Length: 282
Image 1 (cartoon, rainbow, N blue to C red):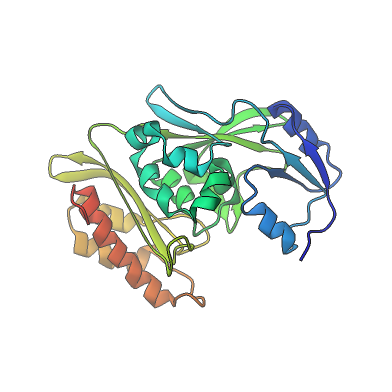
Image 2: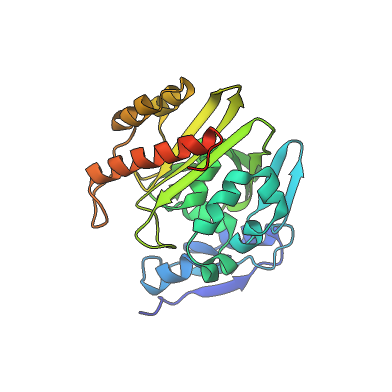
């Protein structure tokens, strides 16, 4: 199929991008990597009146560490982040997740900001952002603001972004000496969306874990924290944490897997990630 007709504009600056989408007479969409947008246009799942190309907007493609946080610009490509020494050192959870994002050709063009803004419930990076207790920087007609990751993903493919907002960066706490992270997912083929995935972060306190955050993806409309399982993990009770998933998760059934299978797979991943958090190679 071919997309419905639309107008095209190239933004010269961040302010210009906000102006263009604010003045659009109909729905406007931002074009960055386009890895999800172009497919939705071709299938006519999205029919914007205007595409605003932000690829030439300066200042959105950097990776920096400042004041104990790692900031990743919205236009940073997945491949750029995947091969970044800064990400590997200061955001190891994101470094673990990136090789699982689609295929190399997609990672070469897809952007970090696009993945977060698209908010696919089976995507890796939204779950990582929530697991790390991160933030999202946004620019809009009323200025700039920051949204906590816990409040950003609101419903299926929906976020706290307004129709005239531009996501400019994400920010996560830089890893410390006591930071422990874990990541695993199960997909039918490498590069496919995960049937179930888990991004986890905690702090090591001797042989115990504190501030445990277990965020599953592919099991609901948004990245899902397993709070009862988190509590059990902090007590060192991994089997109890697995049992708690029956209360924490209400996964959907589809052609990929039944709800029962998804919940079982979530428990399998939790045991694997528990080994990673405790310093193993599981």
